[in-house]
Length: 129
Image (cartoon, rainbow, N blue to C red):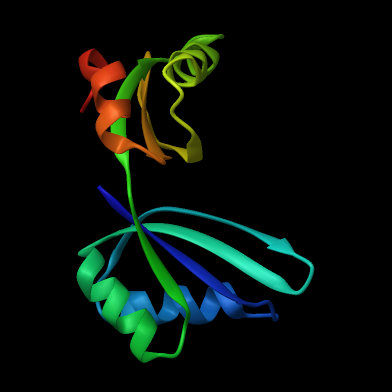
């Protein structure tokens, strides 16, 4: 799965601009989170179709970066994220970002961006979606 990160100077209505643009083209936003660091907004999106989303955003003047995610399914219980984090740390795999993209009755689908997706997939192979 591929995610998009928008890095833009923050201003009132920024998220409304982005989501309205995507809405107008029928883009399905499956996950969004954002934060600001000083005057800079960092908005992470998982949207389909991502290529159309990327094109729309870049053509509108937004600074957009694409990242790949490893999707895993974990049990929804205390310590599940700690276990995944330790397993990757023990394998010397750095986690760059993590998002819970779907939550079901007893499990969650988690999107991980790592510095070594191949190794992360090997370590977490039984959890891959």
